[in-house]
Length: 89
Image 1: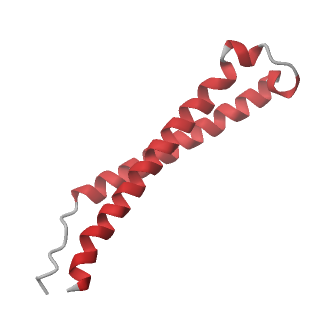
Image 2: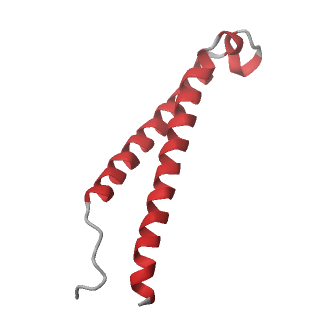
Protein backbone atom coordinates (compact mmCIF):
# COMPACT_ATOMS: atom_id res chain seq x y z
CA UNK A 1 0.00 0.00 0.00
CA UNK A 2 2.91 2.37 0.53
CA UNK A 3 3.78 2.26 -3.16
CA UNK A 4 0.23 3.19 -4.16
CA UNK A 5 0.37 6.25 -1.94
CA UNK A 6 3.78 7.36 -3.18
CA UNK A 7 2.91 7.23 -6.89
CA UNK A 8 0.64 10.31 -6.99
CA UNK A 9 2.93 12.18 -4.61
CA UNK A 10 5.97 11.47 -6.76
CA UNK A 11 4.13 12.54 -9.89
CA UNK A 12 3.02 15.78 -8.23
CA UNK A 13 6.57 16.53 -7.09
CA UNK A 14 7.93 15.79 -10.56
CA UNK A 15 5.36 18.09 -12.16
CA UNK A 16 6.00 20.86 -9.63
CA UNK A 17 9.74 20.65 -10.23
CA UNK A 18 9.23 20.77 -13.99
CA UNK A 19 6.93 23.78 -13.73
CA UNK A 20 9.47 25.64 -11.60
CA UNK A 21 12.27 24.79 -14.04
CA UNK A 22 10.23 26.08 -16.99
CA UNK A 23 9.49 29.28 -15.09
CA UNK A 24 13.17 29.72 -14.19
CA UNK A 25 14.35 29.15 -17.77
CA UNK A 26 11.77 31.54 -19.17
CA UNK A 27 12.44 34.32 -16.67
CA UNK A 28 16.23 34.12 -16.90
CA UNK A 29 16.09 33.70 -20.68
CA UNK A 30 14.02 36.84 -21.20
CA UNK A 31 16.21 38.79 -18.79
CA UNK A 32 19.46 37.70 -20.45
CA UNK A 33 18.03 38.30 -23.90
CA UNK A 34 16.86 41.86 -23.25
CA UNK A 35 19.11 43.25 -20.49
CA UNK A 36 22.31 43.74 -22.53
CA UNK A 37 20.43 45.93 -25.03
CA UNK A 38 18.77 48.20 -22.48
CA UNK A 39 19.83 51.88 -22.41
CA UNK A 40 21.56 51.57 -19.04
CA UNK A 41 23.64 48.61 -20.25
CA UNK A 42 24.65 50.47 -23.41
CA UNK A 43 25.95 53.38 -21.38
CA UNK A 44 28.24 51.12 -19.34
CA UNK A 45 31.94 51.06 -20.03
CA UNK A 46 34.31 48.15 -20.27
CA UNK A 47 33.55 44.69 -21.51
CA UNK A 48 29.79 45.09 -21.12
CA UNK A 49 29.86 47.81 -23.80
CA UNK A 50 31.24 45.34 -26.35
CA UNK A 51 28.77 44.14 -28.94
CA UNK A 52 30.32 40.69 -28.87
CA UNK A 53 29.78 40.39 -25.12
CA UNK A 54 26.20 41.62 -25.36
CA UNK A 55 25.56 39.14 -28.18
CA UNK A 56 27.05 36.33 -26.08
CA UNK A 57 24.79 37.16 -23.13
CA UNK A 58 21.77 37.37 -25.44
CA UNK A 59 22.74 33.99 -26.88
CA UNK A 60 22.71 32.53 -23.39
CA UNK A 61 19.23 33.97 -23.00
CA UNK A 62 18.10 32.28 -26.21
CA UNK A 63 19.61 29.03 -24.97
CA UNK A 64 17.66 29.31 -21.71
CA UNK A 65 14.46 29.96 -23.65
CA UNK A 66 15.08 26.95 -25.91
CA UNK A 67 15.65 24.67 -22.91
CA UNK A 68 12.53 26.04 -21.24
CA UNK A 69 10.45 25.38 -24.35
CA UNK A 70 11.82 21.85 -24.66
CA UNK A 71 11.02 21.12 -21.02
CA UNK A 72 7.56 22.65 -21.42
CA UNK A 73 6.89 20.24 -24.30
CA UNK A 74 8.05 17.32 -22.15
CA UNK A 75 5.85 18.56 -19.32
CA UNK A 76 2.80 18.76 -21.59
CA UNK A 77 3.45 15.17 -22.74
CA UNK A 78 3.71 14.06 -19.11
CA UNK A 79 0.40 15.73 -18.32
CA UNK A 80 -1.29 13.95 -21.24
CA UNK A 81 -0.31 10.53 -19.90
CA UNK A 82 -2.92 8.93 -17.67
CA UNK A 83 -2.01 8.33 -14.05
CA UNK A 84 -1.41 4.60 -13.57
CA UNK A 85 -3.93 2.90 -11.32
CA UNK A 86 -2.02 1.20 -8.49
CA UNK A 87 -4.87 -1.30 -7.92
CA UNK A 88 -4.56 -2.77 -11.41
CA UNK A 89 -1.82 -5.35 -11.93
